[in-house]
Length: 561
Ligand SMILES: Nc1ncnc2c1ncn2[C@@H]1O[C@H](COP(=O)(O)OP(=O)(O)OP(=O)(O)O)[C@@H](O)[C@H]1O
View 1: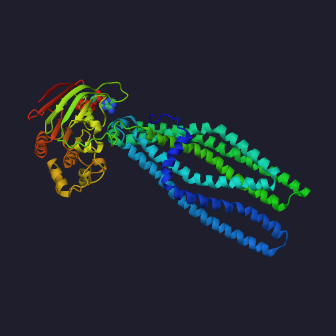
View 2: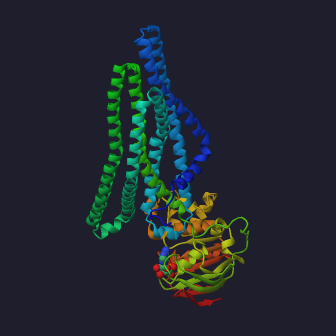
View 3: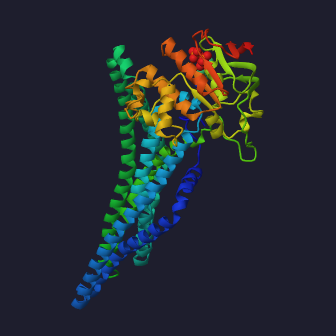
């Protein structure tokens, strides 16, 4: 199910999925459940104690009983408040553990998805799901689920006590509750639909911010500020409309049942007053009955409010779950299929064809090529010929549609993915740096490397100007460095890994020719005996290659060895 398509997941499926994250904390939840039942029992006992206080204490003029009853009521109120606070504390902690578990699992899952996913789905939409939707779930769980347990217990307890006190009056309450349940059933699909629309408007805004703020310089260069301001205004109009519609329906869903309940309490006063006049009911019983009814109407109203909150949380949960439904294009093989290969890095492409999923266009067509370990290779081809696509296959971000790629005689699909990607390292066209210092950026992927090793890699990549201060902050995603400097940092990162196959995908094209040649020489020195694959638009005619792979319309037209 692609992200953004309304899903057909059933409530049962979705909550079972949440339960897999809650299960490790079941002891904590059992303790919370027991504590909240104690708190609810305390709440239920209070009106009955008040009845005893009035009928057997005040009206019977037994002041010693009155004093004990008041003391018991005060004690009960104190213990209930303390237990209530403790329960809430434990509950917030437990629900945060569950939700953080979900977010961490989704994050790990997202980092396994293929690059294609990130070209298809807007980043802001992913942020909105990880932040906004999980936040919505957290609010629901914290504010609502605990009160669901308390209120259900209070409601059932109150109805049972009311039935024991007056079977006549409790019928009225049951009719009212049934009518309200029917009303909520009617309004439910509307709430769900409007919630999804509002959440999607939120996602559109998040995606807009991520895209436009990431391109602020480009917007300024092309004087697009006004246009982008207007686009935000339009997105806000849609969000406002959706939020207001949801508010109206949400308000009706709470107000109508509340009104019906209030009216029913007035009827109880009428009937109860009549029964007292007849002598078939005591004043204490009527007061206790109305108190219980109010106690029941509170939970009933909260439960109805919860129903609305539940519909909203359900939409958020479905949106979060859609992330987990995305499947990675490639996965590490199961242990049974995995082979432990420790060869020198011999590459063989056998009839490799590939097209990006869902496009119907074949980019690479039946490629055959042998790259023995230790070769110095250049891949040439016009822009769009499929060079970077081939590199993606060599690092197994995708698998060929037809044919296979063998590394050291074994299909890449049978290699452990993590190990494969530490043996085949790519320095890509778009250099990606993290927002930390240079040292940490170079060490990314090889955390055990010493400062001296990092320095040696930095020098090999031509980063001599930073040799004295590798702790320099590179700014947000390396934006304080020049394009060429960023390329060299990415190169140093790859060199430090000492892979069996190093692929430079136009990664030195931002540099002056002499610097590029110097770096290539250093790489040849460091990687003598290992495979080096260069992709460059420049002729690189002065350099000697063992193999030249020329791509034209996805086919190899020349392969010299
Ligand atoms: N994620 C994608 N989804 C669909 N098509 C894609 C995707 N990435 C690239 N393409 C298409 O695949 C073709 C090959 O792209 P590729 O990036 O491999 O070319 P290239 O030879 O590396 O080009 P350049 O030298 O300009 O970098 C292009 O026509 C491009 O439009």
